[in-house]
Each structure stands twice: as structure tokens, then as C-alpha cells.
Length: 139
Image 1 (cartoon, rainbow, N blue to C red):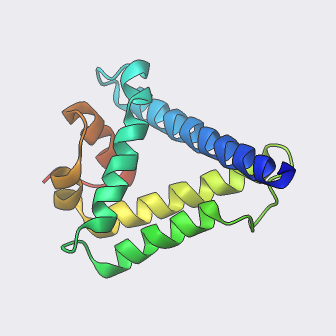
Image 2 (tube, rainbow, N blue to C red):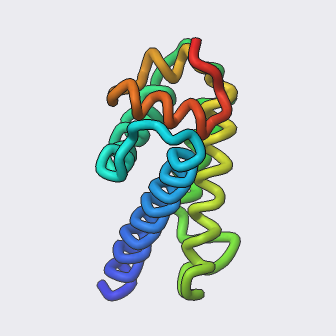
Image 3 (cartoon, rainbow, N blue to C red):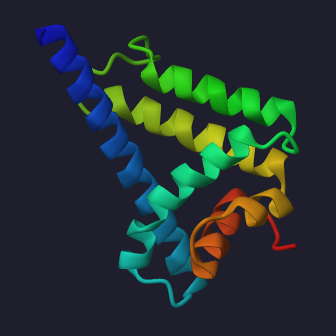
């Protein structure tokens, strides 16, 4: 029972850290472009990104490699085996956040702007921020 609780807490802590890294990256990007995006709008992006990834992974029009990459990312996040063990403070979850950022950037670039725009569930401002972070132009 204790092991299950530790795993559950580890998953929650990892998700919170990934969320914070994404928010920080979006905030830094927003500061570079001086858009009208507020921190509140950036915080609302995380659920939209999660829905976007689910939609991309289930779309047969998206390249198979992207869908496989997203599946591998999910397995990596669920797996108790990490590059750096989670019991090491800060670094244990930082490697998960780094892997998520790299995988998301790769997947969104490979899927393309049109797929991102087609599946984006959020606001136009959020879409613009995600496309900027992925290094993709608007189509």
C-alpha cells in the first residue's frame, strides 16, 4: 500500500513539475513577444495541451511516428524507471520535464501546423503561443 501511495505521489509531483516547466516556458516566450497573453491565460494552456496531445495521438491522419512518439512518452511518464530516479530532489522530476518538452516539441513539429490548428481545443492566443514554442508558423 505504501509503495502505491509513493508512486501516486510521484506521478502527481511529476505532473505538477511538468506543468510548472510548461508555464515558465510559455511565460518566457510571452515576455519575448510582448503579446497580450496574461499569466492566467498561460495557466489555462496545460489542459488544452493535454487534450491536443490526446487528439493528435488518436488521429489517423497524423503520421504514425508522431503517434508512436506520444505513446512512448506516456509509457515513459507512467513507468517507474527514469533517467534520474525521482527520489533525488528537483533533478528526479526535472528529467521527466525535459523529456516531455523534447517529445512535445518533436511531436508538434512532425505533426505540422495544420494538424495542431485542426485539433487545438483552446483559444487563438493559446494556439499562437503553442505554435511559437514549437517553432511552427501559422498556416
